[in-house]
Length: 594
Image (cartoon, rainbow, N blue to C red; front, side, top):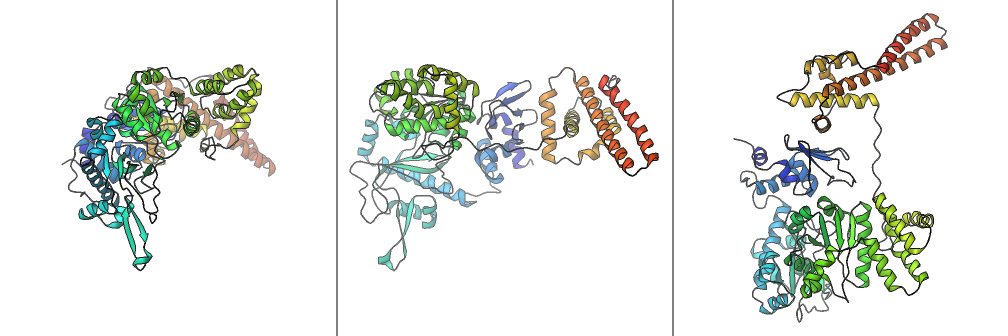
């Protein structure tokens, strides 16, 4: 009987899995995309449907559907196996149970809590009425699994306890608060974190609930002075094993397909903004909840979209959040646009009142640089204050733009708008580039790329030949004479190919094979390419031998050994002659019969 992994792979192709995370484009018999695991401007991430594998030539990550999910979701192998098994419809009864691990138990707890909150919502006509007044339909309320937490100290804890969860687990899930009670001999007491609030379940990128955001409901959630929870409008799940707000975008799991299809992501601030956007058909909308946009958020967006539209609130806080978000997104070469609303409306209110105008705003959204220039020109009363505002708000954005062509274009436009020379503006950009982001104290630049040692030309050629060889051996109908490649390789390096191959780890072999297939599969002159590779390899080997002989001559001269000097001079003469022949022409017909 096929193993679980074999069954899953038979039902899910590499294109099915990877294509749900990144936008793939055909490249011959394979597909390419910008890598989801590191920031890059051009696509170096390739997927081979024939081999059910992927590889990025930028960050050197590669593997199958299981390793991809491990990387993309931050899971271990068993967790990725379960996720893909569920998607493929492959039962794992023999190796898992509902509570196979701590994370699984917390996922189950949060699912049960969601059902509990949903049941209480439908008992409260006044809360349902409020949601309907905000413009939500019954279908939308159900789709986003909205709920209501009872305005009591321990109702949620009691419900979950009856389900078999411990107080400690409820605390770990972020639904309860643990506190020492001096009136009870210092023993710990537990009470509900969310009370009297409209509950918005938060999903991770795979659609599993990892936390909640709770909005206070009018007349409810009265908090006593003994509580350490302030009566804030919104409270969110704290950092837990499952929930990290810097990695979570509200609505992302529901928005992925639309983001991938349209290549555009609309970013808003609140849950209601996201929900009403989806209800109105703008299903490529996601939201940041209780935090600024992070580089991890940008990575999620960039997996599926080339363009980001910022639709933040029209107040000062919304403007600051927009500028901070724009910097992070532009830094990784996303195209960033922005829109604003009349008065102090947020996107949710604007969509509810004037959906058609909102759609038009999105369609005509200007680049964020043009947006800010227009806003500042309208706000500032004189030329000097306008220039100072541009220096404060626009130049830091120009400084971090990862797309240097766009940076040059908009720098020229801003210089013209200010009536100053571009050189002056570039001086300001250079100064701004080294400064800290005033909005959050973080560097405006992303971490530096890791420096990779440069390989010798000889080693790189050996890798290329090895990749071609591995690729040819994997084919049922080979293009080249494999035995002749072995023979030529051994003759040049004086090492059998099989022995040389042992020096490569398995993952490196996979990379080399993948690379050869990517670059040479659609080549019509593979014979000539391999002849060129072997010619270059022979040249490098001869140069290496010549360098060794020259060192020997130098040593023999130092030792005044004329006999060795004459011997090595003769070897040097032969090698020099060989090198000249190699440089003047290709190898004579090495593969003429292939």
